[in-house]
Every structure is written in structure tokens, then in C-alpha cells.
Length: 68
Image (cartoon, rainbow, N blue to C red; front, side, top):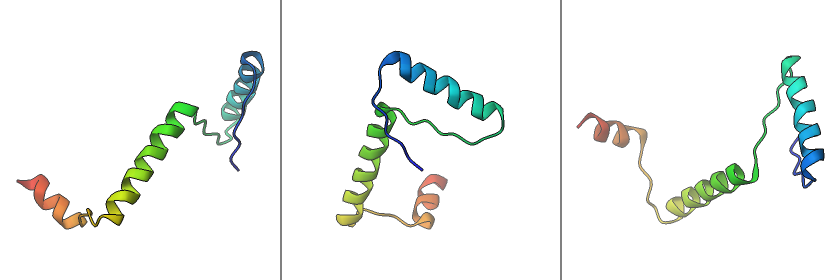
């Protein structure tokens, strides 16, 4: 499940504290803040544009280039 949250600073801190307590109990929680979300979205859009433009390389091509 994904939740996007817009809350006051005090509410945000309470929620983050609660989520941290869940991780201490062994639960899996991943927090992605707005800046990380924007960064990842930009990367996805760039990748889609590269695919659209045919600017993609196979694993073998990349490994060959790294071995040079």
C-alpha cells in the first residue's frame, strides 16, 4: 500500500515515530519523502524517454564497455 501524506510538522513527527516503532517490531516500512519521490520520478521519465528514442544497451554491451 502507498500513502501520500500532507500533514503539519507535529502530526508528521507522530506518524514517523509510530512507523519507526513498527520497524523495531520487525515490520517492513519504507518512507519516501517528496524529494526522493521527485528524484525517482525524474529517473523513470528519463528511462522511458531513452527507450522511446531507442537509446538502450544490452547487459553485454555495458559489460564490454566496463571491461575496456
